[in-house]
Image (cartoon, rainbow, N blue to C red; front, top):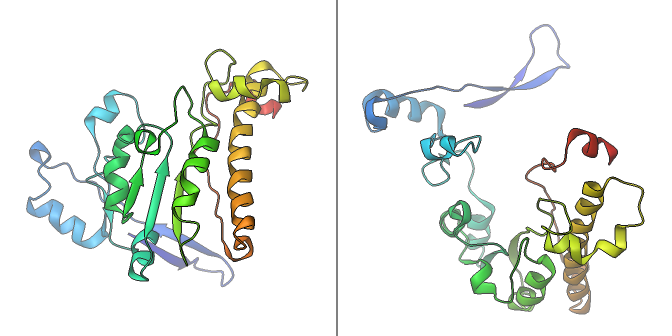
Amino acid sequence: RAGRVIVQGSEETEGALSVIGAVSPPGGDISEPVSQATLRIVKVFWGLDASLAYKRHFPAINWLTSYSLYQDTLANWFNAQGLTTRAYHDHNAGYYKRNQTHPNIGYQVFKGKKDIGGLSGWPESDLVMMQKTVDEFINDDWFHTYYMTVSGHAGYYWDTNRQAAKHKDEVNHLKYPIAVRGYLAAQMEVEYALTELLTKLEAAGIADETVIALTSDHYPYALSDKDYNAL
């Protein structure tokens, strides 16, 4: 359970306090009384997943059994306003069970690689995803659309990363290690995808009325410390 706190002895210092209750019921049965009492207090549940831990995927938190009672999702809020909420991902829909988690958090439409069409190789093209999907919502009066990109993903070498190879000539003159140049080349596809989106929004006359929020889910961990520091 989380809360806002003012540090004792100082009226100007504020912070956040999180309390985590760990329970390990026999056989993983969270319906037993101790687990249920804990859930009623904390309102957030992170269900650890042994299969993810064995795969060395950390944090090994199950995406389908975990939940929060603190805040509704953006998708559900926009659904309540009468919008059609959409989510797109240019990799396999079932990867990390996103074909289940995204509908679970409220997205009425979720399309992965197969449903979008025209996507192949690794990593797939964010630009193609934009080209294939923007017209599905851009003429709506209002829309909420979530894109999960993949073109900038690892590894960052010409022979293993389709997007890095595609944009090799645009970055190969830079004085960086080869892995860093590969990383920058892969990000070029994301750049062109955003350009495609903005161009279509401007052509529709709604660019100034559209809010775009960008966020990453991790740093480029496939780079060595030396290569990362070169950035």
